[in-house]
Length: 185
Image 1 (cartoon, one colour):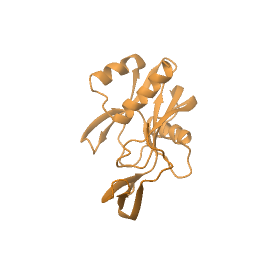
Image 2 (image 1 turned 45 degrees about the horizontal axis):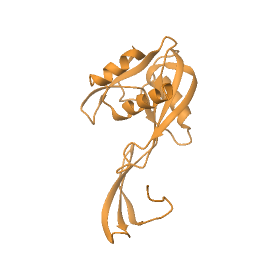
Image 3 (image 1 turned 60 degrees about the horizontal axis):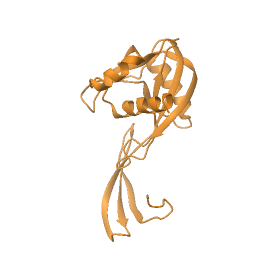
Image 4 (image 1 turned 45 degrees about the vertical axis):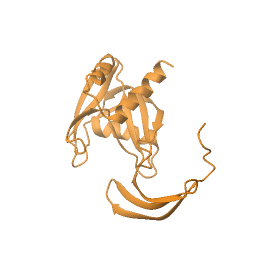
């Protein structure tokens, strides 16, 4: 059984921002474990919460994006997504990101899950939004450094893209797992 969240066995002191960037901050703090009687310096990335969108057309095509990712150094096949802005709801952010990145919009948007991308190093959550009956209603409105190719792929081909490692982004894989669990409880 997990330890109680109410029982604080750690003390955090001297927390400070080491680096501030447009996408988040790098923080450092001295963390003491009372149970073990030890302390160490820890580091954390403080990012905004994120949102990913599974967007389905009426004929069950999935809207995917293909874009270059500096982290992996290659193009990644993904679902639309991005940062949740201050004061914005996860659902609102998902609908906005879908429209901006792809020009698609739809009905019946809803959150189907959330995860902590990497609790060892990050403090944020990533929400998965499902939007059905999407159709292209506008041109893309990409950020200055975005260069996004929009694709629609039959939902039945997603498993093959995952198994053949054409889709490898962990949060995208998580989104499809959440979607499958919703379809097949």
